[in-house]
Amino acid sequence: MHEEPFRWVEAIANRREYIEDQLAPGSPIVALSCREGALLFTLSRERQKVFEIYDRIALGGIGHPGDIERLRLAAIEVASTEGFARSADDVALRRLANFSLSPALKAAFEQIYGPPFLARLLFAELGRRGAPNLFLRLDYDGSIRTNGGSFGKTFEDFGVIAGKARATQQMETFLAGKEPASLALGAALKLAADAWAVGHLALSGDGREELPSAEKIAAHRAEQLATASIEAALLEHKAPVPASYRVIAEPEARALFA
Image (cartoon, rainbow, N blue to C red; front, side, top):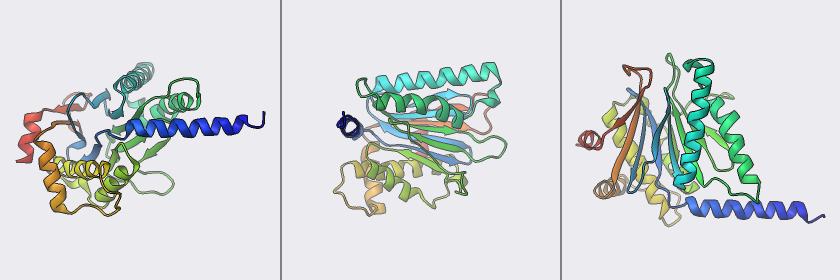
């Protein structure tokens, strides 16, 4: 009897190690504020990783495609139900994450006889009436990290996810102090691609903590852009319809790099 709590803790540790192993190769995803709104960016080779959720909410995910799809559909259902029962303005990312998605992920992770979600999610919510954009990272165990705004913490103008913690930390270090909200879309896209390159380099790096040089970032970005597809979307401040989500087609995105 006395061994049961230890066995549960050991099983949770093994489960965490397994999930981290599965997520490790995931291509990073970057979300930034910019003049036009909120930008989501990644490079991919096989499948879609950036999605619309609701009028002012978008999602990027790494992990198992089936689990990402289940969580995406759950988020859409909750947001749509709340928007129908109340109003579109009542649909809020914090409430969606805190009261719906996070408890479901935590329960699945801690029930060791059932399958966990192999997914790490990055949400972006376009700020209303001059409020800052919200970026929220939701992990497979239900833990949440936002870009600030509570307990006296100032807002960051970005959010990132990657397959490894070190890659995430390096991307955040690279973006700290960059003030992307002042950038036009083209410049923000280039900054997002550089941040992606920093994270991608860290996935296969040698464990050193310092950031790569600007030359190395630029070379890696150019190399990866030549062999992968650009996936980008924008939540627009001045969208002509309530749904502010707009896919940035690859030809448009590549033209902005010129």
